Image (cartoon, rainbow, N blue to C red; front, top):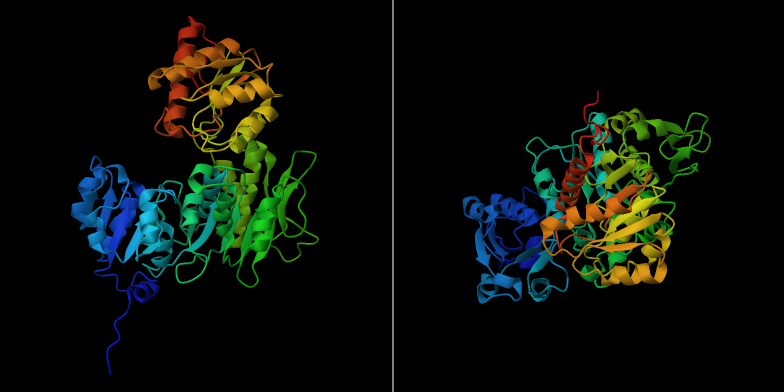
Length: 520
């Protein structure tokens, strides 16, 4: 009998376990960020031959590649595949999520004979490293992903589960599946970039226990090439879900995604919303002493009863009282209830939870003006939710809008905005939007080109426009990359500028101090 030599594709189809034979597999990894390094480290540990392609070696991770047994190929500009990459003859290319489909290296990968995966597909194939194989629940949406992911992980932990919040939240999912002790649950935050790369069928397709798309508004259009492609990527979160597809009752698009998804037999659609829930929903029941968050989905007599999860007073004490954050709590509760977390764990987790930095974070209060950092509002939908939480706002807005039209946000925000302070290298789109839709709102521009001067100038202008009772709100509705390294750096610069401004403005007055400062 003649031996059958497996083709590269048939070999890859069989690589669905940590314990499969990955040795000698030629893998090109595009990118050396946190994700790219995790991919290289994992595959090198499995015995694959790994070539990492990056624009420079000016990174601590580059120095570690040789230690883990991977090679590095420097391609300045990353505008085309060099001969050395072609000659490597990769059987598999793993593309980091920062590479848009139209990027030259992404196009090369798509046209190459090798298979193309993302890091999440690789992690799913390797999830059985230890006998303790974790369940997965998936979180995506235009806004609220990180808060919901953290909440769900906290709820599971309060129930005694060993859990990791991972994925787009900052901890690569590959690091989570390699936990030496194994985990009970992975709460995986997925960006549209990561979802774009996921297959919906075949050996690499995820089968999560529960999944949610929190909301959907235009974002990252320049990356995906348009709104339809962006929404199609988000909709992949529901594919093959086993127990519950959780959707937002206030966003019909998320329900349509569920209706169109190919899911496991018996999988249920579970809605969440701020009103009283129907059977199979999560919601809020009003009472004399405030509202109660309830589950009418995961109990036997859901047509006549509901399970109490937490009170709205619990949420207020944890900084989760704003409507969009209450929705995040409900979504997180639905995810973990789908995997059997006890209702009591929801209240325990909510009471101990604190909202992340740079998400509607109060920086200071002085002279009856509140300064709030929502630098994480990197798109119009997030900024709209933030603006709606305050009656009168001096709004610091601007940056890189990622192909999204900001005019509707400006039009709808006028009722809340006393004045606008515009930041960003190119402010013309904002100037035009305010002139057209909010001509009565005073507009102040920060034309500083020095990044270190941007926020001090913005804070000074905002302070001059603010009146007692106002909130000065940093909710840029845009990415930060034109002037700051990321939204975190932008938020820190804002907070530092606020505190410096208030120290200079206090003139020894003891009533000007950040919240939490010692008082007499």
